[in-house]
Image (cartoon, rainbow, N blue to C red):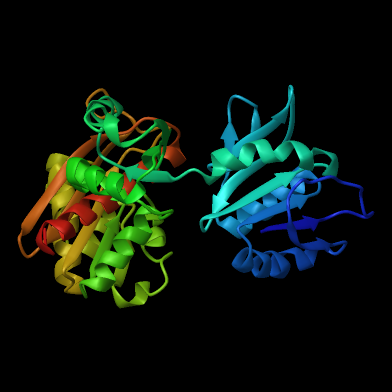
Length: 350
């Protein structure tokens, strides 16, 4: 069944060759959120008609999909949207929300043209979110599964590489993907890395603490974005200056002077000492150069050491990230979370 939601001042004329379960006309934009949630729970297909800029913001918020720049159109749309066009004109966008098809268009006159898109949106789609594997290796692995899908698309983001497949047998494909990619796939759902890690920590009754330098609290922020994080997140210390590393994390100044604050040795001590202080199962640390200043010949912008510690030992990974300051900080936290995820999956410990 199809539900229509008009966010307009006037009731428009429209034509739609399919059965309609309900129609809502909304003048007060503040009511759209409650109405949309009710409609979403009882209908498979929902059409929203109104100003596109308003609909973009509404769907982004309702679906929890950030507005993402689509270079091809030089415009922002909610992440994973399919852009709808009439000839060369953009008339709206569509996406799946909780396995329901939601179509947003600018004018009611386009309703009759939208049905052409429904078949594509209704097809079985499997989405695999990956991290820590190159696009070339992904392509090599996908070739081995060519008999299990009709088509696929690859999308590179700061969060990793997402692969979307069209398939007639979603569960069978998921099984094959999990077998082939193993821990390189961190979820088949619309989850962030911190949600995956947080749920793992909760399910296994594990705890974590964090010592940050170059990420400036972003890692702690992401770990505490997950509901229930108070059961696993003990504390985070932002030891940005060398003095703070000495005072808060008990790192000998001689070590910092000998190896530099941005070093494997300091990252290891940061991780080890915060775990000792907090008595957690795991700990993470970050120290690096986010830019745009601070680089040297030996230590370029984007150099980050990420430490992880548990009762199985401590090690630090050397990374070189590219991008803006914010992008480097995000990539460092994404990698740190991924290291923790893999350590938990290995055997519950590092």
